Structures are given as C-alpha cells and as structure tokens.
Amino acid sequence: MKPVEMTPALFHEGEGRTQVSMSVNRIGEDLIVCFFNEAGHIGATAVAEYCEKENRATVSVITRPGHREDALASDAARRICKAVRRPVCVIAGIHLDDITKDEIAEILENCENLISTGFLSGAGSKK
Image (cartoon, rainbow, N blue to C red; front, side, top):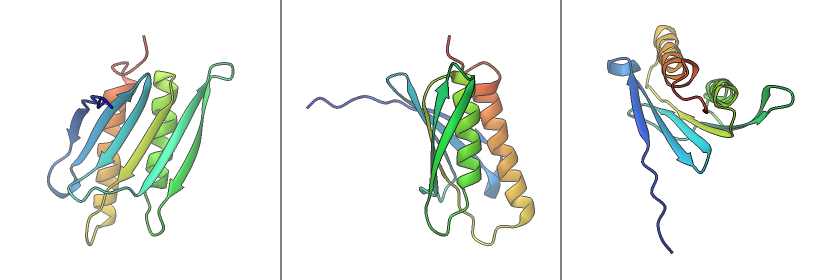
C-alpha cells in the first residue's frame, strides 16, 4: 500500500494563551479543517455537506462528553462548506486551564479571523 501525501496548510491567529492554529488538509476535493492550540485534542467534529439546489450546507456534529467545541465546529463547518461548496469536516479541540470569559471571547475571535481570512475572503473558494 502506497501512503497518501497530505500536506496541510497551517495558519495561526493571536498570541500567548489565546493563540489558535488552523490546519487545512485536502482529501480529494473534500476538506478537513482543524482548530487547536498547544493543548489541542478532539473535542468536537462537524461534517458539512453542500446542497447546490438549495444553496445551503447541512451539518452533523459529534461532541465528546465534557467538551464545548460543538458550536465552533458546527458554525465553522457550515460557513466554510457554503464558501467552498464541497464537503468539509471540522475538528475543534482547544483547551486552556482556568480559562476566563475574556479568553473565550478572544479565542472565538481568533477562530473567526482564521475562517474569514482563509475561506470567506475568497482565498479558499472553489474555482
């Protein structure tokens, strides 16, 4: 069996405790997008499928017990899928000990910036 080469594109946003990384891998025409930090893990996974006829994306989410990344994974999968019009799997796992509400807001803003810069600005759209 020959190994398949998957070279991810890797992006970073923010600094210090609230820095978030986003990796993007292609499998055929499909995308796997991961949001993580230094303590990255699999917290939630969302898979989105684009419907050309209805111009919308539907999403299914699996969240590990005790994790709260489901909203991030679902929203990112839906928005990226609609932008690129292809199947997208988002894996989100961001952990900080003793996280504050301000840090949560900053992490979500960093994720938003990564999504907007990488996909919604047209850079990641299907041509």
